[in-house]
Length: 443
Image (cartoon, rainbow, N blue to C red):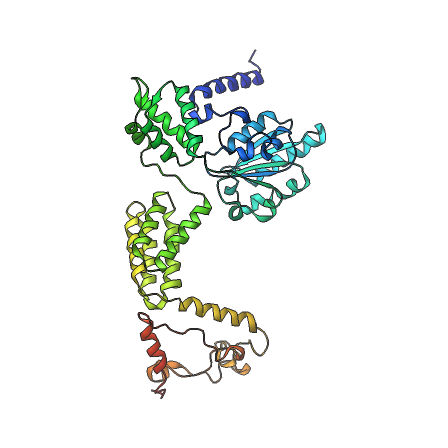
């Protein structure tokens, strides 16, 4: 008789659990079972702290854990999953879709109806969920059908749809300080049965940058490099284990650095622009994001003071797609230097804003906003009978390819939007605009 499938699955799960106990990363093997063993975040998980009370009392409600990697968010959820009386489900935002969310909600509804048991649904990295996926949670969260617990490393005011965020209690986690990290590293070293130099510890804390998982990961690699000899971690071994690791910021630091990058180039400081470019690329920033920002800046801040700037920026963006990193960083650096040293003008930006304000003011209907008859399309049968195109003067029939005539609706006629600056090539543009039409005779 074949073994019972449930028995087989139980044996499999037990064996998998035993294997993970030895094969899982050190950070997972050291994950505390209770709040008393947690290091850091005492404002949230210390005795009597709000998040700890919610978990220990198994109170209903939904909350969002926001903080950088390796600061204890997953540990809190692990403690919750082992203590809650409610059913606990977990969905990874990296692979779950709307269908998975709906199935989880349907299961919660059945559980509540048949067993009067609530459900905790945990979604890690919820910032990876699209707006549609996040919206699919709203009704269930609002009715209390599920208690949504979510974790994110990204600023929720950028990454979470406002209706969902307003229905959750937000708990802010912070990167671990060096004292807290040192406690964890010493615990890890004790677990691995070795020792480390003071210099090695200081370097390890530095490269971890507040991330407990990173600190323990580097420590584990450094210990492995000691084998098969005595386990004593030196500064050189930490260097080797850490490699070229850089800490990645969340979305808020991402936008802060991008802001500093753009403002440096706008301020005509090529060295500052190169610094922020290097920092973003070293941190793993998507080079296409950088390239897009340069294309925008070329028109927004250089504009027609140097019309070639847009071509340089677009070429750099094309190079990113064509050759990729690491080579494309040279193309980006070239664009940064060119844009930073180019003459600056924001007159394109201000001109468009003025035109848009007129469009909103006069609208597109009524006498003030209608397309003038002489500018309307006259290339179809019957257009002439409607008076379309009548009185239009073809500029190429006049000297210099220019003839003065109205090109806007009456409500916008005579309004000046674009006023060239005196910088770079806009000085020449201003001269052309002043002298055009001096001799508008037909040719």
